[in-house]
Structure formats: structure tokens, C-alpha cells
Length: 118
Image (cartoon, rainbow, N blue to C red; front, side, top):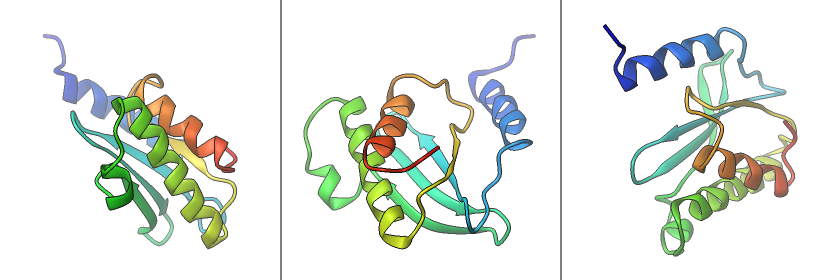
């Protein structure tokens, strides 16, 4: 029997997380994409703590108009600006089991444009 969409994503996510982990020096940029919103977090997996977070529900981003991909790029820029202000320049990217296109790709490119290296 075929896997459901969420089961398939969970398997991919587990496969990615075997190799990708965040440290204090190089945190993990985790992406979660719902039907309406997109969320990004910088995570230190050694401590199990979220260092920085940004989402499309933040006040300055939720007022913006445009497609979901354009808003995802704004979220990427926002988290990159917060990360650089906090002293993080290099990160590892965790796409969270989602395919690297559309909103996930826009978020990553927005973060790269704003100065994050991954």
C-alpha cells in the first residue's frame, strides 16, 4: 500500500536528519511549510534550543502582499538579518522533508541574498 503524503515526508525528513544537525557555531535552519504560512528556525541541536525564529505571521511580514513564494523570500531575509545580528553567518539548511522548489527554495534564496552562507 502506498504511503500517505505525511508519512512520505516524515521518512524523507528522518533520512535528512541523520546527516544534518546544528551546533552553536553552525546552527540548523529548519523550515516548516503549512498551506498558508511558512516558518523558519535556527536550532542548536546540541542544547535542543531554538536560537532565532521568523515566520510569515510576524507583524512586519504579515502586512506584505504578494505570492506565497515572495513572502517566503521575505521570511528568509528576515531570519538572515536576525541571525547576522546575533553573530551567525554560516548555517546548515534543513528542508524538513519538503522538495527544494517553490516556497522552500524562495526562503533559502532570500536567506542567501541577505548574507547567510550554506
